[in-house]
Length: 192
Image (tube, rainbow, N blue to C red; front, top):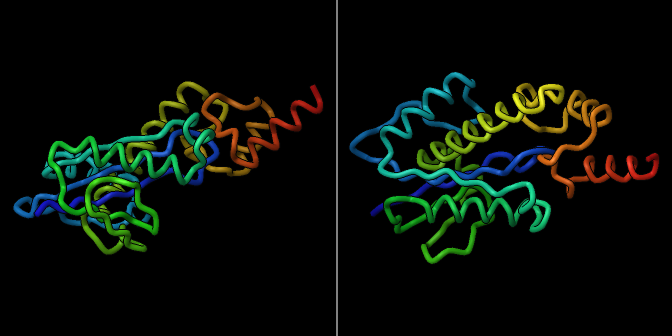
């Protein structure tokens, strides 16, 4: 039976897409050191990212865009990214285990697991793929918009990020439905 683990990365940031990954591990090709991506160093995540892609029976990484986040809301956009990752798998799973309490509506049996990224290896693997893929996207955004510091804060609402928004304005990759961005837009309209 093929069991797929699913997790997301990037629900909280003020900028960028929300990512999700789906992974079916190969029991004949184990991967040591899998755990919640937030508990791993950046270099360990990067090396596991490569190893997971080499050894997994199947994996897929997907995302929902900033426009989809603003149109649907962050939860629905996250579920959409999860659904896309599951549908993109080259191998059809019989069971999908999802980190958290929400599952996308799909034709396959799903089960949500709170803190699943710390309990289930396939979810840990998905957590790593989603996190590294999103971080790589934020590094691309850092190249495109160097004054915003995406390399450091990855789009989260840090003091430096808020300061950059106040100084340089809102970018197309900012989530307009998120309060700090929405409020900044309102303030800009009032004073311009």
